[in-house]
Amino acid sequence: MTDEKQLLEQAQEGNKAAFGRLVDLHKNKVLNIAYKLLNNYEAAQDVAQESFIKAYVKLGSFKKEASFMTWLYRITYNTACNHIRNNKLKTVFLDENVIASRGETAEKRELRDIINDAVERLPLKLRTVVVLRDYEELSYREISDVIKRPVGTVESRLARARARLKEILEDYIKG
Image: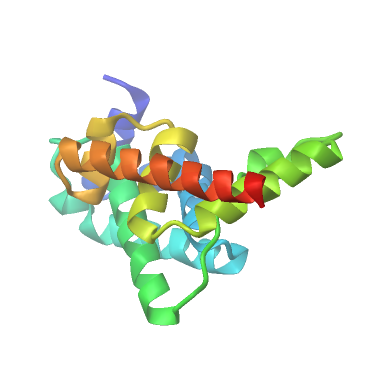
């Protein structure tokens, strides 16, 4: 049994320290997903915290049909979507790994900004599958579990997102 599974079982039995260790294992990923969907660090922190609170409260109802990570991503996704609806935030996609890289050239920075602008223009449903697949590297099945849609829907949304990105980027190049 993996450490995560042991921690999960202990947390489901009421061990708060075990849940704290689960939070430590997943806090960066949860914050990263929230940030990529919201483009607001403070809002992402709030969503991440709220997601962990919801996960703790609902821990007893967690079924091991999906992985804990997928279940937690689903909670984070729903919490971020609710935050967007409730706060009507303008969202944008930023890759913190690129932003944080040292020695970033002006060309790379410009390319990052162009791509971020293109992804920002995608509707949330399409942006979400791009974030989960291309940046979080989830499988189609895992994305399907997170967004509660069939794998075929995930595939078609990703294809539509990539086609739309290509159009947007072609417009920029011509532009």
